[in-house]
Image (cartoon, one colour):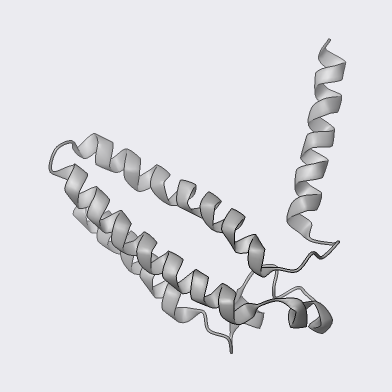
Length: 127
């Protein structure tokens, strides 16, 4: 359990350092597909500070949680290793939206609306 925790922590921490303002337009999903006008509305400096802090904290906390819990129960540590990053990224997406302007063609909201629309049709057909 130690080796996966170390590898995952190194990946998360390195992500915090690899994404910079110079390469954000090529690496960051969503930001790389925006027009120049839309990019000028994004608080990229604030977002990158948040991005770096989040990934540093995530890497350190994954390692500490897995090692700490692994001393008591290896199975529970494995569950934490799999679920904690997923929950942390849900938080990251929700809090990261404050750095993005209100752009009408944001793809994530289109997908959510389409999913909700399809879900309502499916439930109507089953009744």
